[in-house]
Image 1 (spheres, rainbow, N blue to C red):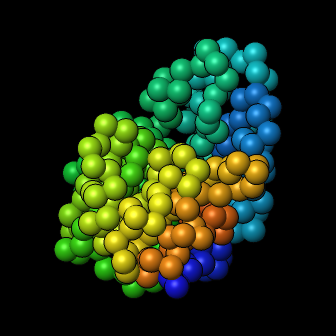
Image 2: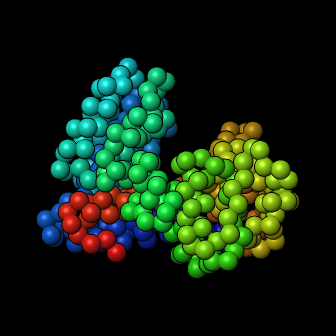
Length: 286
């Protein structure tokens, strides 16, 4: 049976380290600040935003929440972001996606000051990730790398397969694994012989958004399996992209859903906010 990678515990350690950093910064007169913008009333988005607010409070990070109605127009939203770009108390800006229909996510991302882009979605930050000269990394891939480091799982020289090519997870995940000297393959809906490709992976990252998509025959015995999915199965129960009960006996390490990658995402958001505060105040980032 695989060892379960406890993302909840590792995230708690990460958040505790962030809280220590925040305390040190406050001692120097710097209070890291995060602004979250929520448009509309999507229940899942509201839950995510509330969780981020609580996490900021626990770490000592100043947080501001801007809840805008579903009817908010493009110019009004972009104007709000521009004001936050200029606001000194705000080091990080996060606009909760998905946005209501009619609003342009790309325009929103490109309006955020790259130095305040704690989601690392701005083209400037994406380019930095590509060349390996980055300040921020999208929170989910960053969290996965933290899980691997914590578990002393070396990427160097390993065959790494990422299933999914989204801008949020798949593509930046591949770049980070490559920067860590992994040999990386990105799989997607057009990939031929997907099962065979996945079965060659020493490290398999499932980020496809389909419940229980990764089955036991797609996993090399002893592989490390990272499940990014947050799906619902046929009974409405929360599950991941990996068929956990069948894959666990095959893998050497595996992340559960819930309690695996998910908690790390918010922990890395806090870390990115602290990094942004340091950059904007001329404090070296280690």
